[in-house]
Image 1: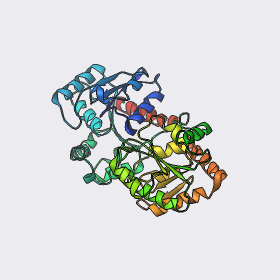
Image 2: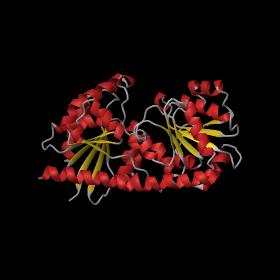
Image 3: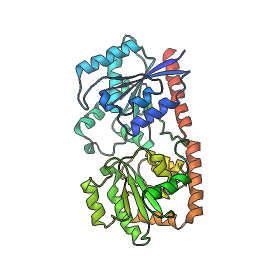
Image 4: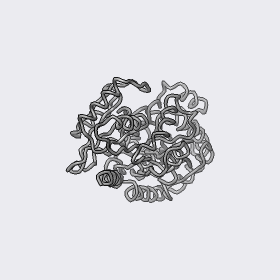
Amino acid sequence: MKRKIIYVITGLKTGGAEMMLLKLLSHLNRSMFEPTVISLASYGEGEIAQQIESLGILVHFIGMKPGQFSFSGFLCLVQLLQKLKPDLLQGWMYHGNLAVSFSNFFLQKRVPVLWNIRQSIYDLRDEKRSTANIIKVGAWFSKRTTKIICNSKISAKQHESLSYIKERMVIIPNGFDTNVFYPSMTAYIQLRQELDLPENAFLIGLIGRYHPMKDHANFLQATAHLLTIYPNIHFVLAGTGIELSNLELLKMVNELRLIEAVHLLGRRNDLPYITAGLDIASSSSYGEGFPNVVGEAMSCGVPCVVTDVGDSAWIIGNTGKVVPPRNPIALANAWRELIEMGTEGRRQLGEQARQRVIENFSLDAIVCQYEMLYEQVYNEAST
């Protein structure tokens, strides 16, 4: 008999947490599990909804406004859950987590509740007040959960320090589809053609939305330093807010005199292509949980330089370079070390990186961990 799992998520805009849910659903064993997704947001907030629906999975929208509690919306959620009769409730992100816990109180038959925490918290003061309050409330309600899934070791430790129940926590890292992210000489050639660069141009990349924690300033300062040694290298940045219309970013580029060397690609839907076209990938953040872009670059056979935050060092193991955060000189020196390894040295390192992902972080292996946890929780509740 199939287990009915209801996933309740804050919203379905394109983001790392939402994409991981999509990847999980696309690989979930449908002979064992019958998933349904409920978004607390409205349909207009659901860019990933169509992709989930294309898998033959129903998606419902409650229509709540971001950060605002709605009694009518909550009542709608409870009524929908009563109708769907789940075997398991899986929250996804903070609001989704609390929603499944609250609504479970009002179901005729209470079911196991799992949370999924997709974020690292370095300082609550850096969060919006509404988000910080939700996180604090979550700490109290964490005792009402069956399991709390964290996607990184650092996230689990941080939430434990915020009084989330340690005994309920289990770590299931993000998974990477190595059939989507893979080495591609075609991408390597075409990316240089797109940027109107020589076919042998050396590209160092940073993929990620524009956000203080991603520390693009650190990346750009390291760029300026490296260009004094290797003046012909080019740098590719892609992600939401990474465009010339971002005046703050443009000011940094101009002040450091990088306009000829830095390529701002904005938000792109072809990240496997861009990633596979790089010689070196980087994460320059001063705060991270489990950075997808690092695992994706490794899947493409691209060696990485990362800052020592979150689980970045754990992900790359011995297949790249780890440097302190907020240290552009160290970042530039690590790039230099990889450059001086030569093409063959980087190729071998990239092969090791891809193999590490396949062995430790492949999507199939991660989905299997979810399925085993679901079965365990269901069986324990049934006995």
